[in-house]
Amino acid sequence: MKKTAFIVFLASLVNMASCQSSGSSKGTIRENISVSDFESKLGNTNAQLVDVRTPEEYAQGHLKNAVNINYNSDEFEKQIAKLDKSRPVLVYCLSGGRSGKAASKMQDMGFAAVYNMEGGIMKWNGAGKPLDNGSAPAKLPGMTAADLDKLTAGAKYVLVDYNAKWCEPCKKMLPMLEASAEKKKGKLALVKVDADDNKELMKQKNITAIPYLELYQDGKLIWNHNGLIEEDQLLKETKL
Image (tube, rainbow, N blue to C red; front, side):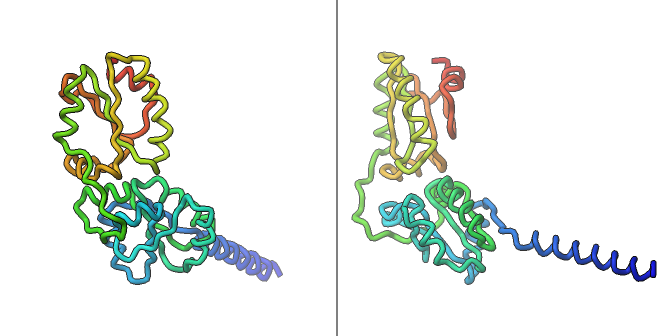
């Protein structure tokens, strides 16, 4: 009797372990991966490639065979739900922010595997990877490095803010940068450079992530910073 009870107990333990293992295996794989790893996974013919930028951004150039599902659209979750949850999804945006949030949503929706490209299109371009040309009219080439040199040479201190309309950290930081420039009016000038409108300049300067800041003194670069920064840290590091 005791032997039978022990066997039943042992079987229940095995069954519990099996259930726990099964539950964990159902969890979504969600990873942020490098440009090179992302490119490697593009070779998987079963993968679904999603560009979560706006249609305007997509039209300026995108990865080959990418489907455009705008993260900022009210229809985003409805459109995403049309994808096959059992197949891996490769997702990207301009710099990795929106696609990271999209990957989290897809994880919550039960997709089996979601891979977000770290650094987005900016890192992809910086690595010299190919893009399919979009259907939008060609934009003006934008600012050149020589144009920037002229802007930074005319004042004692010039703070250059490389940003984009779709970049949430950029939008969060902008009021602080504008307020700092206003406080130090006459000593500090603020120059805003839109990454989408100045792709050639971004490439020339090898800037692959935004927000990105540069501080020039009399035309010479004396400080730079990648990513979000608070005013106290900015003033401390730049000694403005």
